[in-house]
Image (cartoon, rainbow, N blue to C red):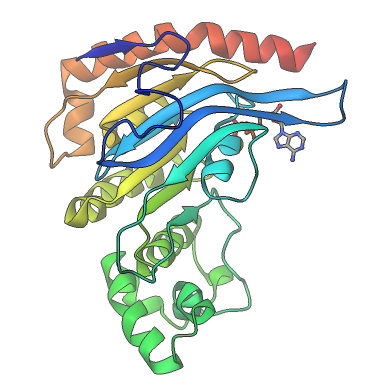
Length: 283
Ligand SMILES: Nc1ncnc2c1ncn2[C@@H]1O[C@H](COP(=O)(O)OP(=O)(O)O)[C@@H](O)[C@H]1O
Ligand SMILES: [Mg+2]
């Protein structure tokens, strides 16, 4: 496994404001985010620079409160950075959105049927009813929920709801998927199933993904690179390449001795950050 130890998180940037490579789809340079009143600010993110190549699957891994969600929200334009720049490079000639977010839970509209939830982004873009349904259906099939098109989110299990969220993100055909701990609320077995499902779906067209997680094994199974963050104020501590071949099988990967070694290596990087975050929470 290649190890790109980072100094201040800037190794990946060729120069401030300049693209690292033409192929970079996601590009953050020197992001800093402060919350709160002047004089009483919390630094949520510090000196965060990252370029994600087209078709790359990158995870942000770090203790709770280290700024993972903040980084994602800045990239999604749901939040403005206090300084630094964040860009998602667009494909030419498309009316699809630059990004779709997939959240941990509670992101479906409970009053809309499953198919209407999946088609919601299309509706927002003014696509007519029949066309929306026609376009949404294959994505429901993709996540194995064709039979549940007319159910409501409240009638589904947590795992099924996250499949709907995935279908809803995919139907928009965004340039990048931003996923914020989408499987965190699932039980252990459903988590494994959803990781394998995501691998399968992602393999079809290898969208650029930035995936937030606090689980080391999940990051290894899914990612090409793992970005380990420090406890608050969140900085990039280290970036690790995961050289397991694709297509991957999540269960077989876990049985591989390299998986154990890598996961121990990552834990050694993460442990002090988790302890620091815990001390911050206690104090
Ligand atoms: N809207 C907000 N207002 C004030 N503080 C916030 C807000 N959002 C996040 N924070 C703070 O910023 C820090 C990073 O939060 P977050 O990005 O949610 O971390 P993570 O997703 O890694 O758990 C935390 O200290 C959090 O309390
Ligand atoms: Mg978060």
